[in-house]
Length: 356
Image (tube, rainbow, N blue to C red; front, side, top):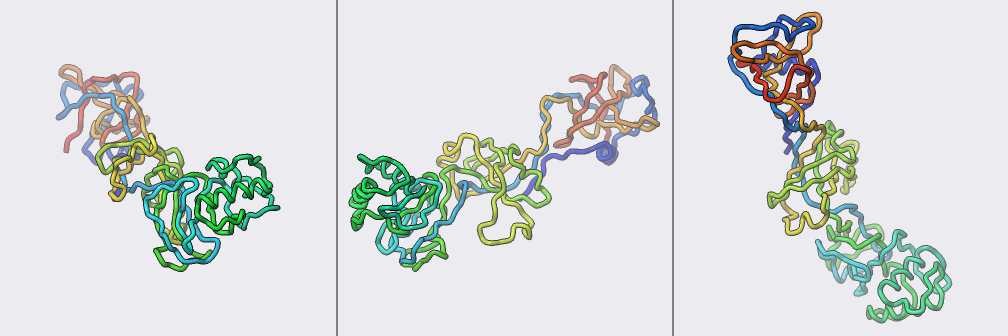
């Protein structure tokens, strides 16, 4: 559901908006539009006020987690312990079990791609040794890319703690490397499912909460990284955030053929902001595309289109029992009000407003 709550207009659009609302067209559009004085008062008046103008669009969204990625088994097997959706898994814990053996999460940017054994060298071995030290099994281990006797001894101590067959080797598919702790966002395989390298067992994500929202392709400007947002959570509280980027579809749909864009929004305050919130409920996201703070504003209906060689726009300023036309520059328009500026106007002045 989309709700546009503001819009930006140029000179032609101001004219159309003002005239469509019944604004006056003043015939004295000369260089000194402020010199004319009439012994009359307009049918309705308002005052010039200071306000913040915000051009925004509001859509529905949902709480999610950043950086979705599928976890596929390196070898074929049967799922004997399925992943629990919503669980947070940390270093040294099992993501799931395959053929009654735990598949353990370790930290590192390089994926597991082989069996690791004595004599091997590589960045995967370096990652393994760092994790063994962090888990408390690296006594006497010098951390480097070599899988030597000290590495083998550390692996045996670790395997013994996991009730695995103590081999001193890390079998292919026994570990999964991820950059950090993960949240299980979806179980793609159920208990007793037969799985292989071509299918996902589960989908994990960062533990950093985000909000995802759908925008029309026509609103692509709102998807620019850094665009400010205000999120209303299911509890009714609001949180500030910024667009971090767009998200590729997970179901294989061609993003180019889709009429919508999935936008990911990082929340100021992180996990504490969504603590206790119903992550299955809808949230409301207001995208702020443009804003002007502390500017002079009047209702759009107060703007007068000036005729004559100079054209432009004015306000009918009311003082005492008379009024005069004062030329103004117009700016941002939002929620029925328009930004105005000029040497002859100030906050608190009374101005005329056109009526139907």
